[in-house]
Image (cartoon, rainbow, N blue to C red; front, side):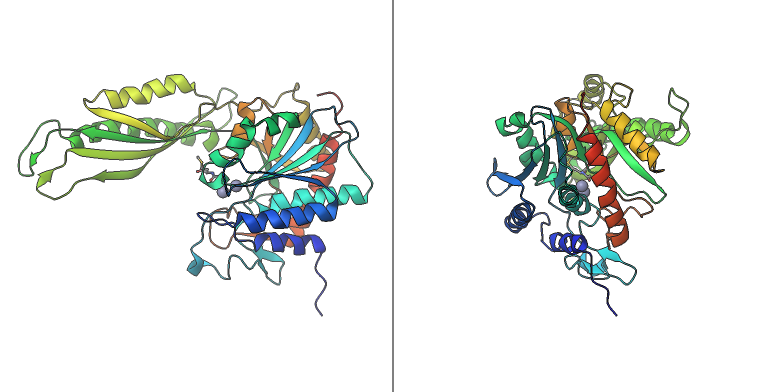
Length: 404
Ligand SMILES: CSCC[C@H](NC(C)=O)C(=O)O
Ligand SMILES: [Zn+2]
Ligand SMILES: [Zn+2]
């Protein structure tokens, strides 16, 4: 006998089936779906399109006291590409296994969260529990490719300023153990191209100051920096005596190398691309001077910032942060362990924190393998439903905070 599926799960699976996959996400279909949901629930909806074809869907449930700063529940609508042949079923069918696992691209990152937010509003309305603060649900495009045309543009707009956001929730990551990750900051993503130029000639000679020789010296400096950070991660302790997490150190990775035309011709130009993530413990200006010093120590060498974020501030988790206190005590009361950390990669929260808006990243994915961006990304339907209960009570508490 087949049991009937919980309607929340059915709606979640519908959302997963919309192919918002980069590089050509179907944002039109996605917007249609979200607006239908809003209509069903009775939420006010707005669509902002600061960049053509990249809609930001904003759904609003007004609170009992709309003069109080509002809560923002943010999620991105795009998902990363798939290697379909590596999946055990079609990543855009959202198939469900006997054990309740739902397999789909976006199941963890982060349509489970975006769906849960909608279900939270349904639940609170069913329970006749209108909180005092207004709740906005933002569904933003392009997070997976940097978010400049999504959250980046949104936070700069008057539409955003009018919302008077006091606190935001955004994505987290799965945790294989029985605890929730809570992200209160992230590292600044810098993607750089280092280009060197030098003498050319016959490949049989020992010509001085070639582009490759210069680039090699620069790469070595970056690699020494990488080694120091790796050592800190593996054996170091922070000033509080705790082991470092990845988010606490700065990562440097050589990810692109380009040069050469023919074996016996010394190339006149060489390029190295690095993915650097600058920890919130680091002064950004000093760090910029340090790496530019590496590059400019070689003649005719340049640095280009392909991705650059000039803020690595975080949301302090102290007694003055009433949002954090409520969240921490809420989890404690429910016997849910939490692990506060710095997110190692980049999320849309950085745009909010840069404006001074406190933002915490939580995906209700405990006891779950980390499968974001991986093959067979999945979430169990029972965990998804448990997450809705969690978010419903948590968001109700947060949206009823009086003094913040
Ligand atoms: C710098 S924009 C790219 C964003 C992407 N975010 C994640 C979560 O993978 C990253 O950190 O690589
Ligand atoms: Zn994500
Ligand atoms: Zn992602």
